[in-house]
Length: 106
Image (cartoon, rainbow, N blue to C red; front, top):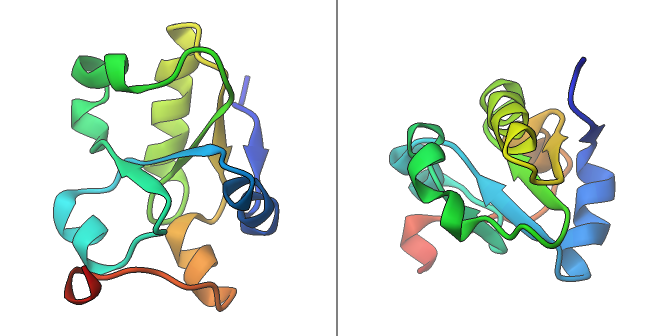
């Protein structure tokens, strides 16, 4: 069964309300462009860093286009986390004209 998903329009409303967003892209991708509210946990590190994922709220997971985040959501849901995939990923966020941070801006 596919995991639950939202689009970037819905994500924008949620992050503005303080929702937890986890970015599972690789470090170079995260440095290049990221949503300012995102916590960075690369996909390969997710199993070992589950203690950093809140277990008492919905967690939204994003990657570049939605594939890696879908895998992370599947894993998190198996661990009892209420995780939701962001369809279209950071690419859709950028295409929508929403702001991102880069390494140069930090």
